[in-house]
Image 1: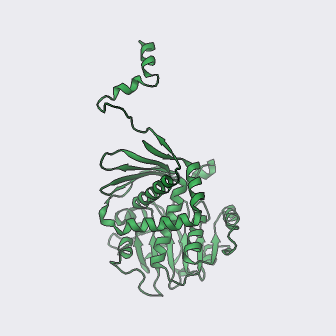
Image 2 (image 1 turned 180 degrees about the vertical axis):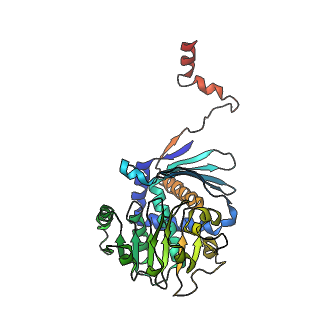
Image 3 (image 1 turned 120 degrees about the horizontal axis):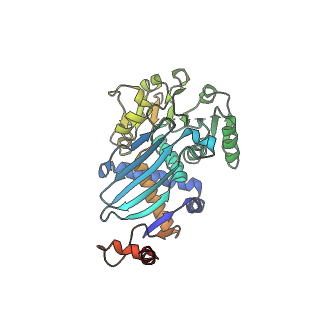
Length: 349
């Protein structure tokens, strides 16, 4: 049997754990798996692109567990009353190939993305960071804000979006956290002024330069989240050239990240090497660091693993027969005669 977690069950799980503890625990789970990087069979995600969006499959496995995520990215969906990003995922037992978890990942992906941002910022941002700029106030923004406020000590966030309604929504949703000061800004340039951390999380599938070189101050950590597919960027190329750039999985980021603008030999640092203590992260208070985040399958693996553990402990989800059972594993045809199948065959005959 396969445990099935639908959207209401995932929301119940998040409420039971608490959004803030969920983010923190998930960041720890992701880091645990990044540190054992060599244990995993890794590949870039398989993407099917159209003029208006992308559909992707993201697989990864170690010797015991296989995971994949199905995810889309369609910026025009909001005009249809649909989410820009939707996802679901699966965990399977490598020894048998049998699925053990089938789960919604639309809500969970937002949590895993902010948890990954948090994990990277802990390793790369200046320890005394207190002010963040948040450029792009859509579906991911509240999660990013909470992760950095609750777990990194960010006290003030300057927010900006070309769509004022998105900023209204963000401010409304975060009003229940009075210790977090939100400052509305009229431009991205105004928002980033004096920021320790800049998070860009825009949705448009276009080559944009949300952050220009003149907007970057010494010591900033840039959490570039929105550039995540070919032809979609957020940072001016010169911002990258002047920074120390960190990536999740280089073969994928070269195609999808902001570094797609630069030559193949442009130097980057694998984040897992920093987390494992193999390579240095930030090399000085004045250095500009960039986490060119595109989202990698190992983060979803860790998320599904965490969700399965938490759901099992709380007895959440239902067991579904996703794979046929029975006494004779060589008799698959016999299943066509069960649950009314035999009667249907007789009626046709």
